[in-house]
Amino acid sequence: MQEAAESFAIRVRDLVVGFSHHVVIDHLALDVRRGEILGLVGASGGGKSVLMRTIIGLIPRQGGEIEVMGSPINHDRATRAAAGRWGILFQQGALFSSLTVRQNIQFPLRENLELSDALMDEIATAKLEMVGLKAEDGDKFPSELSGGMTKRVALARALALDPAIVFLDEPTSGLDPIAAGDFDALIKTLQKTLGLTVFMVTHDLASLNTVCDRVAALADGKIVAIGPMRELLQSEHPWVRAYFHGKRSQMLQPKAS
Amino acid sequence: MATAPLLTATSSGDALELRPAGSWTASNAATLERLSNDIAPQLDRAAAIKLDMAGVRELDTLGAWLLEKLSRRATSAGHRADIVGIADNYTGLIDEVRQVNRRTPAPAPARNAVVAKLGDIGRATIDAREDVAAFLQMLGALCIAILGILRRPRSLRLTSLTYQLYRVGWQAIPIVVLITFLIGAIIAQQGIFHFRKFGADSYVVDMVGILVLRELGVLIVAIMVAGRSGSAYTAELGSMKMREEIDALSTMGLDPVEVLMLPRILALICALPILSFIGALAALYGGGLVAWFYGGMGPAIFLARLHEAVSVTHFEVGIIKAPFMALVIGIVACSEGLRVKGSAESLGKQTTTSVVKSIFLVIVLDGLFAVFFASIGM
Image (cartoon, rainbow over all chains, first blue to last red; front, side):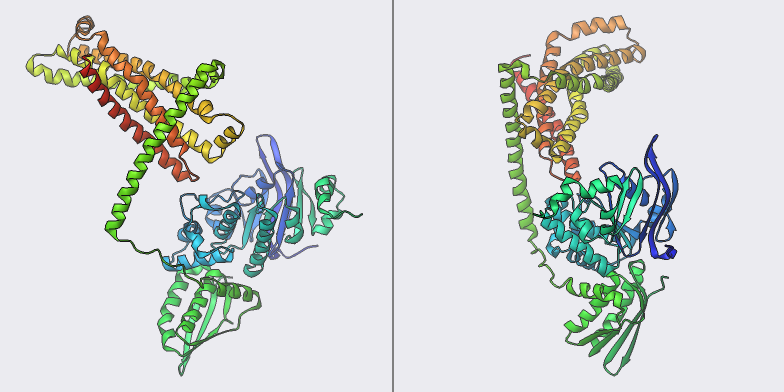
């Protein structure tokens, strides 16, 4: 199935990443279509975060090619300058602890655009409300936020420049099932309204099931299976079978008695 | 794909038709803000607004919000505003933006400057009281930990104590020696230069000896230790507090004071007298060298004069102060470390406070000791 090049948001070809003799990503190929939510699963320590960080240019690669929105990504200054094209939600939020929530959201705006302070405040409040927080929350400091609020603020900051792609690193980890469900719904809504491409690293089977259009499984440094959730459930790869049909995943299914 | 944004306004009668076109995205932010600000006065004059979005090629939150702001401005003035020609893929975004910024939070009430100033002074006073309380609390906790150690000597963490002693004692020697050597040399040089006018060169030895042994040696070393080791203690304990390591210790039934603070403070109390002694030697050595090469006073004469000028009392007065200064530095460093809150900024602030406060207290303590020793005739 050959698709036109411009229908892909991210194209990764033959990627090799390793740290001193230890190869983490081994000749990996991955395509992310525009406007889809792709979930990436893999063993803990199996290189999911390494793959994500390599795509955004934080980790140098040893070989292969990466294209994001049609432009090649290298571990250099030009890539960093283009960072406005994507937003990243780090696992712990990575909010700047000395700035208020509003200043955190305004930070990318302030650094990249020339706007009046009044408009910047309005945009920050708009983003806050879009991720389901109140305007009053803007004056809080990151240390005063709960886990769920931190994730929402981090998402608002990731969306500050209206990027075409957002990378989410375990967005629902550490949230209770209700908050995680709300967050999933939020991602889905924002993806629809803003037309985002979402690249999501997650272990949350529920989010894989509900929000992801496609799921990619990373094992042994390669993508061993990719497709909609029901296709992955049919996969014969031993690791994928163990992941989706293990005891823990079975617990989620209602007993058939 | 991105094209320059445009905003054309055509008025027919008292109706105004706005036609935004091009890319209304964040990359054109400055142009967009100017465009929408320029058009704003015309809005107030028109009775009805029609916003035709058919020409918009790209739209993001920023652009949508600016357009929404225009239509909101018209409606709030009591005019009619219609938005037409929205492309299908942007309807969701426009609807979303309509919801936001509806409720402006009440601005914080402005406070009287005088009242605010008085409030700040009051708060600072209360904070100062808390500082004293925190200091005393740490001192008390330390005493209890020491009593515990005396009852069960095996609960003393020897490994930790040795490691801390290595860090704050052994590793500090080179810099302490260098600085005190230089200070001793500078005092001797200044002394020789000025005393020479009165033909009293030889009294330089008295000055250097007494000054270094009684006051300067221990004071300089204490200040350096406060800056070098006190700050490290605060930063370590502060980041352990931030990462809940201290809470983890308590939940395992261990006393953080006994495990973390006692070895650190004991190490300081052991190290500071030793460092002061070494520092005093280095300062005398520096003074002696300067006296020899700059003042022309040979080592034999210097030593003989030093023997006459200083007595063991001078040395005792200096060295007795060292453990107390170490205790103050340690307690301040540890209690400031425990006051670190969640943010990186707070860690920096508390570390600064720790160094400033311990240097201040060390100098105050030195003054109190001076009064004490004078009154008991030492």
